[in-house]
Length: 203
Image 1 (cartoon, one colour):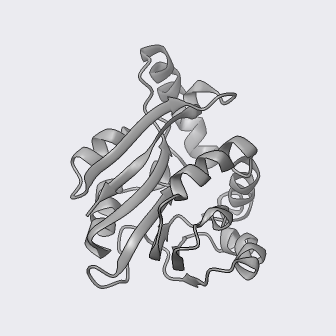
Image 2 (cartoon, helix red, strand yellow):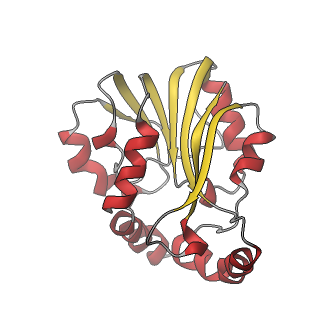
């Protein structure tokens, strides 16, 4: 990994995703989390302010040391204990059925083996435990999809993510069972990056 991906990209993510409209989505996705929570792609800790009081702890999986440094003030201010717990969502260092709930926000677009990551989340959730997620991905409009695919090389270089991930399709072939899933274009965002899918899927 180069200087840009190690040091600058996490700062770009922290800046772009610390936005009022995005925080509204975070609050919606975090509602209902409880108990011990696994968060894959913890990033700079932007979800911490939206955790319900029923959450007893967060186990943060994050590959970027820079993002974790950026998260330090948020972790220190959080009333919920945060445990740094690994850097690879594709190989989680936890026993089966360890967590009550899980959280994933704008993460799967950058995970090399998304199916494996979802299978790992399913493995470590207790039976009936829910993954709460929001992701941007494959748009329903063919014109937007063409732009997403044209822009993918630039998006991979700048943000490390794929724009046309089929989130609903990934969940459908995962060990998780979709309990609730909605999709919409985020107002004010470019359509190529602003088509969101959010909901819950249970183990």
